[in-house]
Image 1 (cartoon, rainbow, N blue to C red):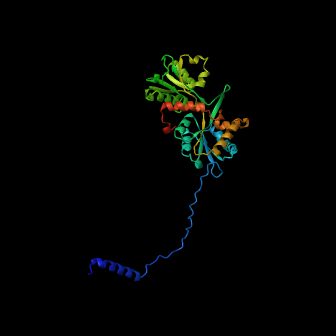
Image 2: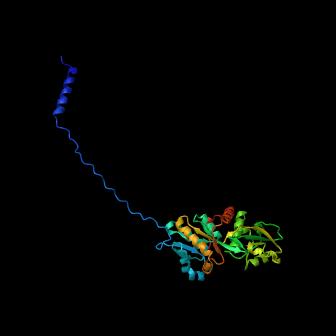
Image 3: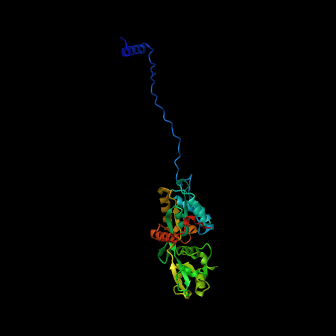
Length: 324
């Protein structure tokens, strides 16, 4: 007797026959593998560091004698070309202009190198615009100096060395832009957490001799003058009535600041040519138009370290400093 268990083998067999007799399955057509051609990448121009004839390196500075510097600018550029670096000289009238050009052009292809004063160097360093490559120096009585120290003097009636002596009293200075008699005292105020507003009156005088005279006479409670000037008065009655209070580290006369993007093959030859020219008496007249009585020397790290520590102690934000 048939039952469902007998039907299973039969059904399976019929399905097998049907599949064998049906149309053959479609097979994929094999195609040869094609190796794709590489797509060329767009051309990228490699930046050329400033210092070539087509892209000169710019050097900006405030000359000691503007008129003479204008007349000798091409001679100075020719001198610098001996380094193998093409330089365009730009003469500025203010530290603010110098710092702006320096800090807005720090890449290799747009580099600007700049001669700045001590506080200009502090600003450039705070803004990460570059590092010191050279310094100006002065030969005084056989000793090489890289900066001027600021000497704070106080009328001897007060018996104190603190800048706080100026609270409610008069300060003598040369003027708003004078580094020694006004800008450095403000750094001392910052170090001692005094507000400049504690000064009752500020008297602008003609020269440093007048500051000493007025402090000694009591017309001003205090003032700040170059330490080198005080040294000329050591045996002079002008110091009678004056106490020599605090003194700053040397404030650099001038620093050549080079941006971090400028490669060594541009920086080093330029530095070498300037140092060599400074030791050549035949170049003295040319360099005097730009640097006055100062010479050019390699960086004195001890001087810069002391100055940098002095600036750091003020807590003053030199990255925001702007000088006219």
